[in-house]
Length: 96
Image 1 (cartoon, rainbow, N blue to C red):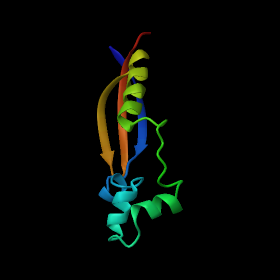
Image 2 (tube, rainbow, N blue to C red; image 1 turned 45 degrees about the vertical axis):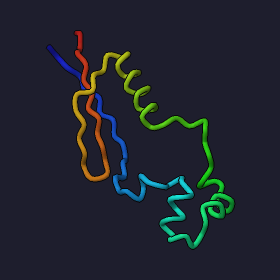
Image 3 (cartoon, rainbow, N blue to C red; image 1 turned 30 degrees about the vertical axis):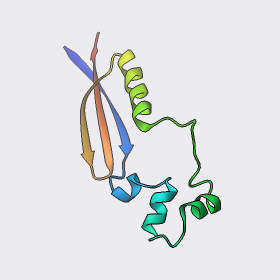
């Protein structure tokens, strides 16, 4: 049996400050110890704190990506984390 491999690279920032509150004005206000209110931050920085109802949750985006790869006969076999990089390793059988 012969295999071919496909590697997908993702940049991931695992720091809590990046995961929490990057688009949440309440969390940002708490980080500033209330010196600027959540309403003020949302009003003054609308592009940073916009409610984007059209964007999908990352879990849904990843599910769609994995399902597409599955339809192409790729199987996710391993994930490898190197610093801020995450590698997804896929393989599929080669039919010569």
